[in-house]
Image 1: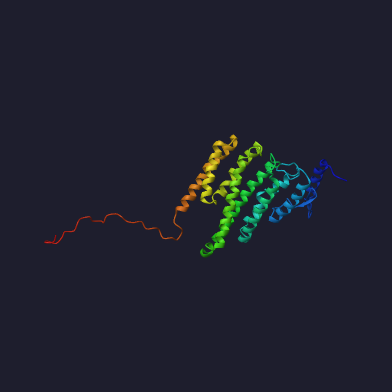
Image 2: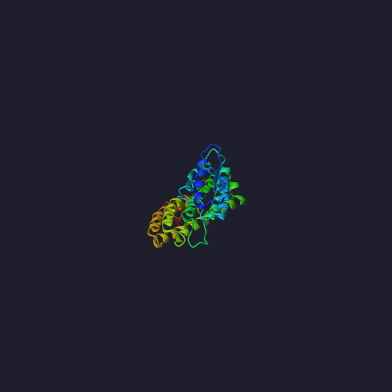
Length: 292
């Protein structure tokens, strides 16, 4: 017997409720998904993506919604801050946590591929896709924090190795690209509803400062210029207001970073300035008698 769409949602409810039972497996529309009652790892995201990819290919408009009556708990677990806790556990090996953060970020990008559809005139999952973008920015900031901590544990010779420098450069380049894309979405007023972009701009204003401090200098300068333009020219007043509130926060971070970079490196001898002052006594010494 083929189930109608009207019967599918009560079935989804039943499966969600059954997940509360001990050792019960959770299925969504016939596909196994991770337990939503605990923080997710990169492996959990991988399992979810496999399930949602199959569902998306066979059913229309069936991906979990951000505020869905029955699918909301699944989406909330996707973007829950609790998922970051294992990565921030200082008692776990730092390098393993760094690798996990990098893998989770990759899985989030794959998940966004399912929720974004730029062939559509208007995004079918606008609020969900934008929510995943701001969550990815937060994951990127955590990855940067862990990378910095790991970098500080290395010897000076190791910090300067080509392999380490290449890895750090790739991380910065990926963060710059992600941040640039995040700003680009604010201009897509035809593909996203006004309410979606207003909420997105507010969430973006909260997440960007933590990531902004890690970005390369040219990227920070470009980002400030773009946000200043958005604060004046965006089509929606609420977005202009959110960007106007964000601008001084980022400007203060930029000034602080510039001051820190201008300071001499720890342990380096201060640069001696050329002394052009006159000697203590400027009187011309008297010449011996008879001498010209």
